[in-house]
Length: 200
Ligand code: TYD
Image (cartoon, rainbow, N blue to C red; front, side):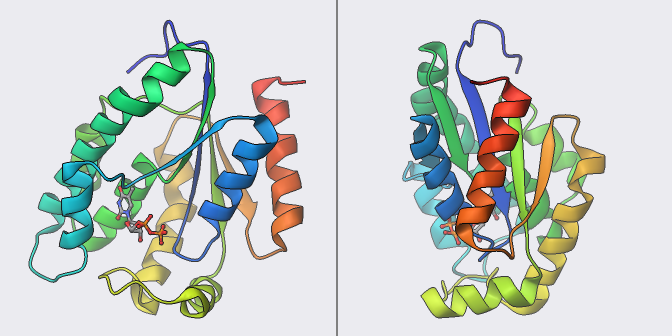
């Protein structure tokens, strides 16, 4: 999807579990007076996919299809109307999560890309890079989700795939060292956003 007729800015925050995407996306939305949103949403496919990733019973492809369906509904109901209105939208996880997590589950990367082709490309994407061990320690502190992703070996695969994303995606990606304290990370994200998006 192209960005014609969209005066607003669309920024995505990505990273492995425990990398701090929710904290940083919320802080960025506050700093820019933007709209915070997250995937998966509570749409029907979004709710279904939460159930699917809590069981061993579904194929990577069925999971990827539901994440993609949830994403298109999210775009059409929540994101695009705000971008048309000139607002800044900050999204906690987006299609990069599908490229990373669903390929780590075994779905084919090219197919996931094709599936997500209709989804609007962000103006800027941040990837919070932390070692899987660090991320999992944070996850254990806040309480683990009982899903198929929150274990160390899967998260190691996820971290590696995020590091390889830059070669796969044409749009602007900024990799941020997510192991530092939240305030320093936030300041780096805000200054990079202003620089890339030419904001005051
Ligand atoms: P979420 O409930 O937001 O968990 P968290 O708060 O830990 O980010 O997301 C659930 C999981 O779904 C998370 O581990 C990342 C994963 N995910 C995918 O596998 N594919 C996707 O397309 C998205 C958006 C998320």
